Amino acid sequence: MKRLRTPKRIRIPDAIALGGDVIEILLSHREDAHGLRNLAEHTIELFTTPTEPTMWRLFQTTYDDDPVAEARYVEKTRGRLIARKREDATRAISVFNTGKPGLASFKIRTDRAHTLNVLGFLDDARLIMGTRLNIQQGETRRGEIRRFASPDHPDRLPRNQYLFLTHLEFKLLAAVRGAFSP
Image 1 (cartoon, one colour):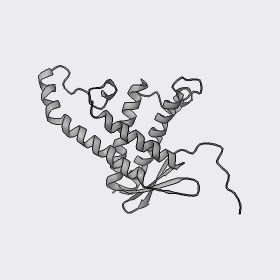
Image 2: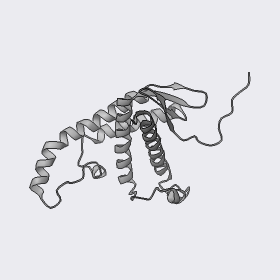
Image 3: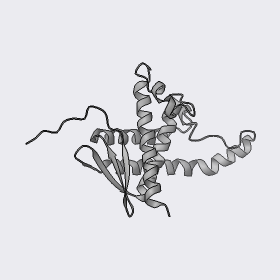
Image 4: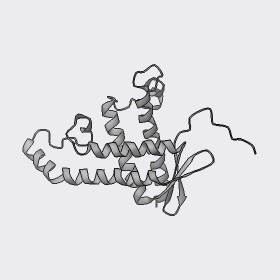
């Protein structure tokens, strides 16, 4: 029996519309799904303290110049917003708990509703991670990637994780558009 070779480079995540209401998420390894589950669990924990500084991009102020209006807005919307974000992360955990090893990847199939939950979670996780890493808008554009993910950068590992999430979100969005566009 011929032995399969391990790929020399790390495979990036992908997503494919399979038709109907099904999206397939392709990850390099089962460990990638495990890491995404852990990140979703950590994100849920962070929602217990939504005033933590790393959460500011998720809960930006709406009425900067009117503290009374801002307080009313927060009172009316914050609880529902946190509940929806927790639901996205919880459903993402259930999606990443499924899946089967493929020939050279780990395959997860999900439906439209769960795909949208995963997208919500990925967006929240990227915003939190971007705040922690002090990533500025435009810093991850194609021309900046080499500098952004430089092997010499002290935050190389979390920056690469941020790029992984960014790429997965981009691929998932493309698959959703392809599968569910009119």
